[in-house]
Length: 115
Length: 113
Image 1 (tube, rainbow over the protein chains, first blue to last red):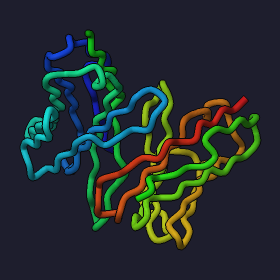
Image 2 (image 1 turned 135 degrees about the vertical axis):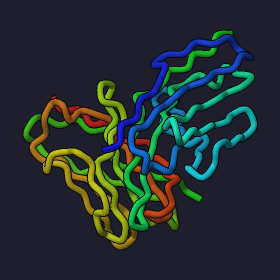
Image 3 (image 1 turned 45 degrees about the horizontal axis):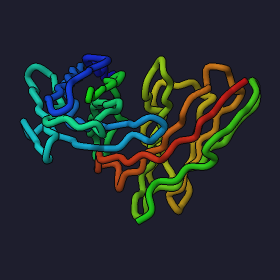
Image 4 (image 1 turned 120 degrees about the vertical axis):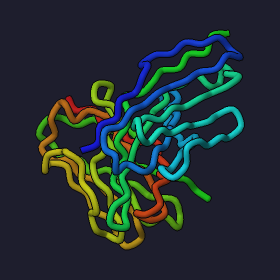
């Protein structure tokens, strides 16, 4: 099955700086890569996603890049703010036979924004 | 539009008991997936339902089961509870199996004593 590795497990950055979280996946058939943000005691929230036919996607301060050849994708957050502090999860999914397989998640990155 | 709802929010059970958790998806969404979240294993896929049929299943023992009703509401059941089943159980709603975007409910926190 699919395996998703996520690094780093903890990332501390100064407010206003950029943060980058990286993930690698094992199954070349994976074609959908979402990122979720989970604040303490709350549900995971979808913040951005990318499909395998796209190399980069941006939404305001958040961007995701995908390198299919190397089987890795990254989350980039620019101009970080205190409210960006949370655990971020990457995931991968395979769409087959008209349906989508379940999401395989990375272990998460605890992002800490230092004031 | 109302979000994904899960009931109950908290449960305390003892080993050997069974438990049933409920999930109501976003109106118009017909697929429901279930995940288990623990500090050690992270988020793990349990199963996915669409049109009252289980479409995919993760790597969990047969003690974990589920079903979906005609109104798209879903339940999952865990029988013969073990201490290791203590976790946050999350359901995710998506429009159709072919629509990957999944939106999570608040979860049910299950504690097994």
